[in-house]
Length: 356
Image 1 (cartoon, rainbow, N blue to C red):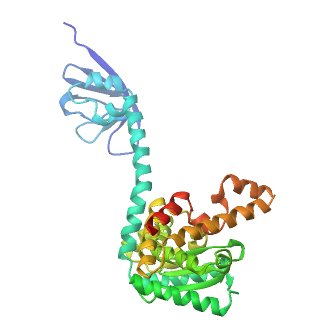
Image 2 (spheres, one colour; image 1 turned 180 degrees about the horizontal axis):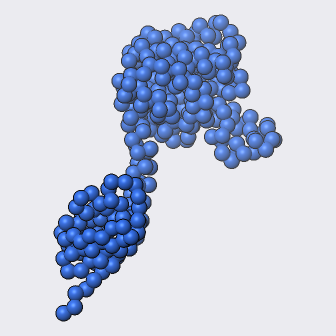
Image 3 (spheres, rainbow, N blue to C red; image 1 turned 135 degrees about the vertical axis):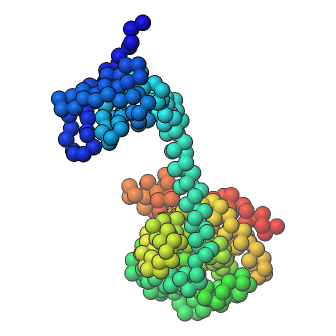
């Protein structure tokens, strides 16, 4: 019976220099003959080490003495060196189109899950571990940044500010939050009626919100809601989620210099923020309990949300610009309290239910 000879074209390197020469490998029975212009030798098939097959990468055949040959003729190598040139798992997987599709879907799913659940989890964990001093520094830097970017000094009358500050202090005391949590009044400028809790325990309320929500009981209910965000550290978690680089620096290296970088993102991040429904439900529930604890009705928060919603609707109806038309279709594009604290009928109903 005639011996089958398999030939393989390859580039040969002797292992002593970078010189390359083309050779032919003749694999017959149990021997391999390597022939080229300046090289010829015979070795046993079992002495040749074959690299695994992986995609379109060249196959490497190593010989005793340090020489090696590279070839793209995968089929010939598989036939000639069937004893050692078996297909690897990686090659079998990447050669199966169905596996590639499944792997792509899984990769997209993992990336989405990491963004949807992993990032919020990391932000929550880091927020819980952040030292109080570092968070206080973040509060001051954030307020400084947002004052320079958006707000102006408050024009609200001193008696009204004093009354609201007194009520806020009562709420804060009943909540058990630290004395460092404070209320700041600002002219909202182009932001309009708004209130937001900055990371670090600073609640900022605009003059325009007090003008829209004229009943002081309802204004206090809004403040209770903002204290709910502070209690659950929603603003800090939201900013950390939006600043993953700084988050990792603080978590891994304890880099306090990252505070300034995070604070610089606060104006844009929080003014455009739309808290998750879970965040809003947590803050609302906290406000309901806090209002009850201080002898007030949770219904006041629902009334405040309704007043803000009606004021926003009137503003849009009076404005005939293309921008206003777009806002009518999608109110979340508008600035103001309801853009950062989405008011829904469900939340108003929840306030009514909590008051019963």
